Image (cartoon, rainbow, N blue to C red; front, side):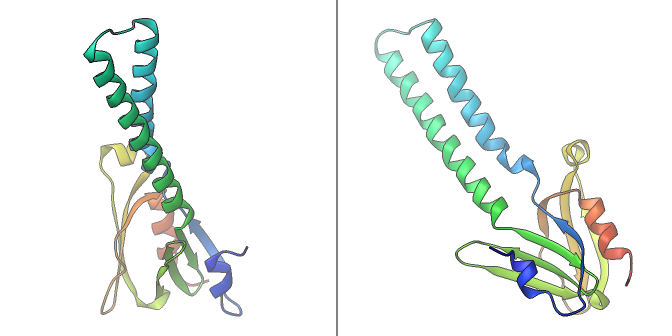
Amino acid sequence: MASYVDNVLQPGETVRYTGTLHWIIFLPAIVLLAFATVGLVVMAVNPISGGGARIFSIIIAVAFLFGVLHLISAWIRRLGTEIAVTNHRIIYKRGIISRRSVEMNMDKVESVDVTQDIFGRLFDYGTVTIRGTGAGLEPLVTIASPIALRNAITVGPS
């Protein structure tokens, strides 16, 4: 199955850069699943008796359930998001079943803002906001390698 970007390329248009969401979107799922795993190990090593065991088991089960749901949600979000910079435009698509796509011609781009907090700098992710004449793209949040995306946009026509 061809990607959305491949399907909308015009004759003579080439892709200069493709971006994706950063793996950090999986962090809530990882934390919840790690909590559930540690809880299971604690229960196996040091069994709790009485009503406390039941409450602890419920907490572990809820953490596991929410961890799996977060994992699936993040995976679908990452799978359904496409970011591409071509020699003519910027293409941003999100969604698998229902789709939302935004495109901006390169000659309409006025500025590209990159925002990274300390963790974004450490793990190379951030928010990219593209401002164009008359309007701008919505902020692209949790983007992997945001500086590379900005550089691909601001490099100029080829």
